[in-house]
Amino acid sequence: MTSTNDAPVIEARGLAKSYGKMRALDGVSFTVGAGRIVGLIGPNGAGKTTALKAILGLTPFDGDLNVLGRNPTAARDALMQDVCFIADVAVLPKWLRVSQALDYVAGVHPRFDRARAEGFLKTTDIKMKSRVRELSKGMVTQLHLALILAIDARLLVLDEPTLGLDLLFRRQFYDTLLNDYFDKDRTILLTTHQVEEIEHLLTDVIFIQHGRIVLDSAVESLGERFRQVVCAPDRVEHAKALAPFYAREVFGRTALYFEGRPDSDLTPLGEVRTPTIADLFVAKMQGAAGQGAAAQGATP
Image (cartoon, rainbow, N blue to C red; front, side, top):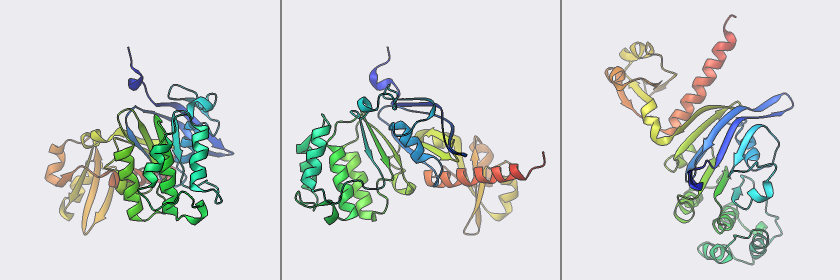
């Protein structure tokens, strides 16, 4: 028998969404397991936010989508008992006092622990009587974090949660998230442009571009699939003969990216390593863009 923790937290099959003639999601399929920290990563306009809106029941869609065993559109009220969400734009009214924000969440969410929220806020410079308009953007983000840390939710969805914050606040945010929130019974799905800062947190990555999945993998499997080779100039042509999916210049040398090539093929060409998630993201996005341009220019 499959336990609750073994069942997928999110299961999307053929997820599609259009805005007029623009295809925001084009038959997207992916699965998010319980107890994972998943980065949904893509350039602006790739479909990240549309996917999150579908998951949260905020927009209609085509295809099949189950979140915690529920259809997010038909059962959104029930789903929101188990989900927390932080968006990139603070939505708290400017006139609202911090204490009133806690009052509101306590009144609408049955699993809100006010004492825990107050305990977290005591570690910050935020005063309970302060109004939102009196807080810096970093403080508003800390207030959001205090609210979601105090909710016993199974799924946390973060859409660019540290956008516009300085490095100190970004580090504090993710440290708090890991140390005070995440455990094997909770799942985190997040989007961000600061890939370098969160890649050490992730258990899984999903790259999306033009509404389509470019890569869906556990982080621990990336080293088995992908290799970066930094070649001296006299080895570049030999390396290109092995069909890398992307290449770029690095201080007078060439870095080439391969998928599915054994190290025995690559070691004679130069320094072989597993690419970082940030480097792999650039390689996949640029490689896919180059292949698309080549296909458009090809003669039928």
